[in-house]
Image 1 (spheres, rainbow, N blue to C red):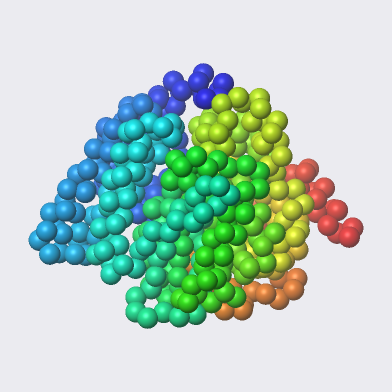
Image 2 (tube, rainbow, N blue to C red):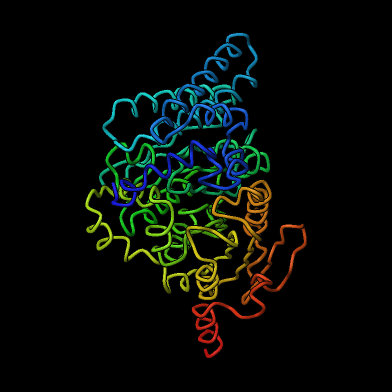
Length: 422
């Protein structure tokens, strides 16, 4: 536990009690729907929550209700209704186990068993098109779900679906089916070091092993007959936008990257100014209990810096104007350093979850990747920028908010002057 998370837990409890999930993550329900959560389930869960300690029970309670109904419909022969309910149950059981930050806690393991059971039933009812993947990795194991299009598929494009720090591989089942396999694209939703079952098996995240894990997943995909090894991209949100950027800078097998809400700033914002749960979670992922050691060994070394200049594949970044984990000026400064063909969208008045535009962003990211993997967007010097207004308008050729009046923040202005001088 961090000093702030211990001292400020009462504030988070008050926020949950008074405003529910929206008080912590404005408009995030839109994003959670893209991660397979039915809004009625979400409402039922947070009607039961008055403090953070109540989250595991609330998620488990509503998850069990959905699992029971899924079993009822499966026994009655209504396969698709059952599969949809198993999906809803799986993502809720996943939330329940995530809310317990002790890998050895038997309750966490029991909830994971329910998650796996629901995914197994879903896979069976979907014609075995959702399959578990377990790979050896640096003395441990990493876990993923493979999502296949219907019918006989060979040489198809593939996309790695990268989760944020507080996500698991099951969170992408709904999006994989809606946005990727329905379009003939193979999808692989992953857990890297420090996440989900990978963390439960003792594998923690360090500065560089997440991008090596992405490389291990690339090994797996390139060996599948269903996949064209030259057309593999990655969709990442939040921390996977960061990890995906690191992977794209070091592994040329990634042919395109779409990153939304990517944490590309100084990491003081996410770990010292944002809600203390973010730092507390990352310390758990990294296996640290000593906050000073975590700061020294990892946090201070995490900013991307000039690493993004090594990216060569087409990249798309999308971020909310008021993302609470990455200052917009720093995100724009990071974008300036990218020399690969690039595109940027800044969404007016959106926060980190991008909840108000989540459905648009998930669909656009998938379509952008489909076109990028088909060879578009690769022209040298490509630099496309948009500022997406809340009222539906879009300003092209710049992503700077209009209220800046052409005066960029000092740090961003310095980076731009340096770019022009070269």
